[in-house]
Length: 157
Image 1: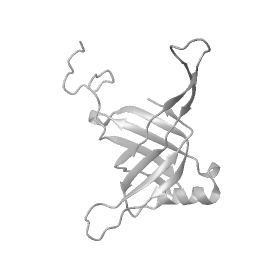
Image 2: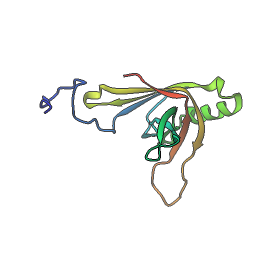
Image 3: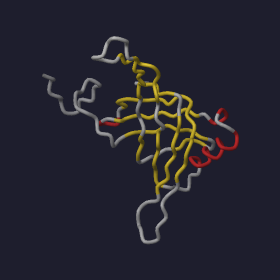
Image 4: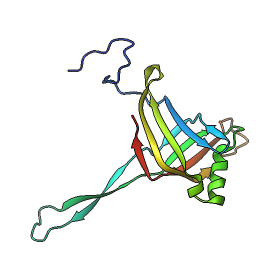
């Protein structure tokens, strides 16, 4: 049975789950850092499995791990006057991926704004930008998205 948590205790040994609503995205593109995203999706890893049916063994199939797949990360935010997100996409399209690979870090924040866990994307580059839906009868915030491909995820903390 876990020990009850003391109020104000923010040690990393807490057993309570951390809410997803506080996070930080560290992304620096030409022109400076970009921040304040409302949603990040695609933080995942999947180990591919090769099935190998052994001759004479009809009651099971061997499953062997092969390589890791990393889905693209999608960043969503309200459209602002800051143009660096779309500029990074255009720069990659014009001058190529190698010249525009950036470091991207995603940090989950806990109570009291302490870092709970940080992941770094290796070899990150933009592959898709989606602009807002424009509707004259709506008063919703205009949202833009940037999809980022990467070569792997490293857990920093």
